[in-house]
Amino acid sequence: MEEAKTTGLRYEVEQPKNRIYIMDVTNRDGVQTARISLSKLQKTMVNIYLNQMGIYQSEIGFPALEHEKNYIEANLRLQEKGLLSPIILSGWTRAKAEDVEQALELTRLKNLNLSISVSEIMTKGKFGGRMTRSDVINMMVEAVSLAKERGVEIIGVNAEDASRTDERYDEDYLIEFALAAKKAGATRIRYCDTLGYDRTISIYDSVYRLAKEVQLPIELHCHNDLGYAVANSVEGAMGAIEAGVDAYINTTVNGMGERAGNADLVSVILALTKSRGLRNSGLLDPRVDLKMAWKICNYVARAFGQPIPINQVGVGANAFAHESGIHADGMLKDRNNYELYGPEELGIGEVEFKRIGRVITTGEYGGLKGLLYVLDELGIEVEDPRETLRLVQYAWHHNQMELTPDEIWLIANYPEEVRLILTVTP
Image (cartoon, rainbow, N blue to C red):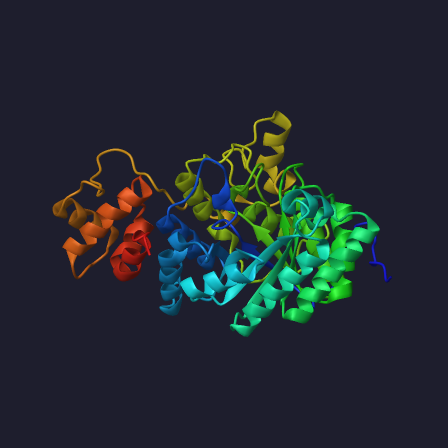
């Protein structure tokens, strides 16, 4: 088996022939965070902001669920009208033929990730002896084959709990699983560190071996149960790059996600562009615009109702705060003494969602005069103010919070799509 060429930094970065792309999963894994969620309109705004940020792909939801149907259709229409372009929109289903069938009957999504457990502990624990590990591969192959037959363009296969296939014989099974997926028509393999079990060294080595054997792009899906999510995502991606394939890192805005969360979007971008050995490497998709960080992070924090921690990487209130005498002195002399990057690079301070003082707002119980005042302040013109007011009232009720200027802009400019988003029943 060929081994990765490592240095003291574990890898050498030359002019990249392969790249690392961001596939954000806030609207799929982030919304599975216990006790909190996003409305369909808020999920749409997240997709819009991700697109403005230059993110390659958004996993926008669950196309096999009926209550996602109208939201997904509306987002596809917004894509066709250019508002959600060039970002790739994809959905998630279980790797079962009936789920693929349901997803393709309910929606027009042409990009799917199909997920099934691969570790021995999950095969036994979840399927209760009803399925062998060969059965798992067969079920996955049937689902992939159907997706390919039905014209799905990007078929990702999720190896759930891949990191706990950590014994050598078990990792051989993971490779067998991935090769079967490739043969059936998969275009990517998602290596899932579902419980945040991996370490940077182990995920690098496992992904390198997997990518070298299978020669398909690898997605890294890492959870933060042990605090390794960002580091594991980056090092796993480097394993794929060193093996000669593209890497796709799954992120969520503000690290939202089940249990301790997922790899934080902004932290991953900063690690890929500012850290030792990767700074100026050119590995990250060049379309990514970090100046959108402040806006999207604050929007998602507000929508989830979860304030950004004071020490959050890049966008926390203390990310650029200096108090120690030595630090303050060094900063005043040259900010590079104590900062790897500046707040201006993240667009900090360029957006406010809630004004204070004397204001007129529009919402669930607002009237026409108030709406016209707000629209005039925002420089928005509409053909049918009464219909706009109706949609604003429903959108406020839908979100259960004051609408942002961008949400009002979306309602005013894309009323048909917003009406569909707000109609949750298919």
